[in-house]
Length: 500
Image (tube, rainbow, N blue to C red):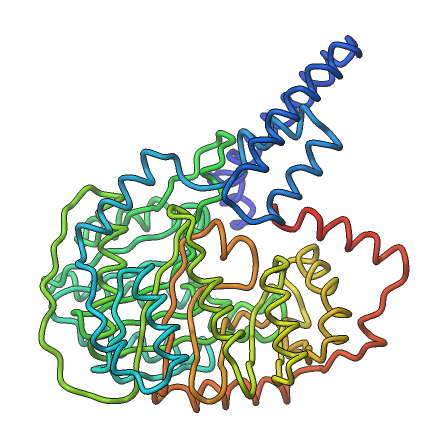
């Protein structure tokens, strides 16, 4: 009863209703004028042609273009309305310039000394791409700790939060009231009272109605600054699609956490909805933490206007491999996360292992995966057996036949929902972060992760993946086949996959 009351009195229901009313009104207005049939056809298709030409000339993914062109063809005027209002091709130009200016002024283009020192051509090329397009440098003076579950991640995070002396910066897509948040909040309140600067960024869509007014008031009274990224207002707009999907925690410029784990009880398996919730993350101790702090403060300045300029501290010399943190956003039309994944897949010589909760990819990514397998590389992909989004899961299944025909091995994690986002190749390269294999992560959301070369974490990441394989069902060609009706259904869904 309490949950129902919270749902009714919160922001989520009124916001959803307001958006629905706008869509229904638009539909009926278009329907109302359609009685002038000839004029309606002329106007609607004229608008569709103009927008279609605009879409064709856009510098964006071809699959995204095809989805919108199909919608314009089927329902021209309504499709045009949706495209103009919710196409989600990026933030408003003013906001794009503002964010780019902050990022460029807050950091200096890192030199390529560490890149040049890499002892492998493939590593140098992959790291140089990240350096040029994320303004972040590869670093060595870092030690890491990999977590194969949300529970391990949470225990370590709590321990490290208690050591904070100067500042704690946290940024999450979801921050939900419950045991996990209460334990973290208690530490944050204690640290804030000790004079530690505590700042939190939460995506407003991911956090909508998950933190009550009383909770926000409590944080404010204890000196903890909480900001919401891209406030979710009940007006249909493409800006609603650009979400902060990053997961970052930085402590005293010494420690950084990232991965797939949000702040919510389901991530530590205290609130089971889809069986066991499998996730992963990584803690980095040393120089990599500085880069993640820059990522956080860039977004903090964008939201608050508070200027920042960091001086890089001296770090203890360590050599546990090369860590290259990266961030990705829809503001620059450079699809960093996707290209990092593709570089790893294209350059793999022995194997490439992929774990993702969603597999909804475009032709470029699919071709890279298929060609890698056809070339003799051992390509394996783990997706959930119990999905959290049924429609997205059906699109994922639509790729099974083509993957299996090319020699890719596909597995479904049978214990529950696999939320882990990993790529590992040849015992040399790996990446852990927030990036899914889908259009939303590649083209619409703010994301982050860390690319690694010969690091201390890679054997543990591989071990975790191999353990997941034992807990998964390998999909056969017979299981991948579907009847004609299901194939048609999945085909239609795939055509509009960029909009999911």
